[in-house]
Length: 162
Image 1 (cartoon, helix red, strand yellow):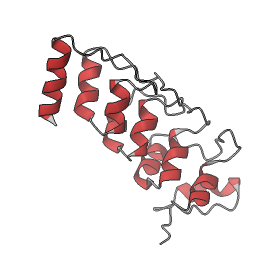
Image 2: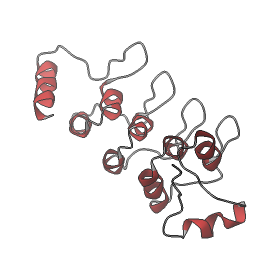
Image 3: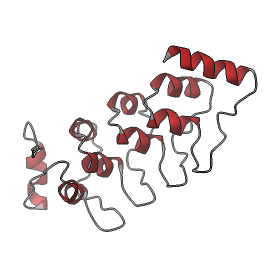
């Protein structure tokens, strides 16, 4: 990866690329770096002042939404500057995406930093356990909203189904 970052820096120094330029899908270098787990590129973009963590692509996703798709927990930890409650164009939060894709470690981290809202709904009115169960990525057993808090205090609130 360091070679790729060095090439990227060289392209920038030569004036061949504009790190803030977007493609037809609204992706800039930060979006690409997040989608492909390129934390060193994200750190370089940040150090150069080119990282706007709230900037969205055409689908309404910011860099954190793209990092969640690959379960990139280290990048999300590093990007503590991202709004964890930001919603994509479909109304899904980081927790919605993590639940849909079966990223238990991300859900546990979001919970540990206080960003897991079990009642948050997307544009279709679905909360994270609805999405997880519908996609059969993670089975979350919650019988009522009143049990949610005690449920999250258990050592492993998620059950894998095979």
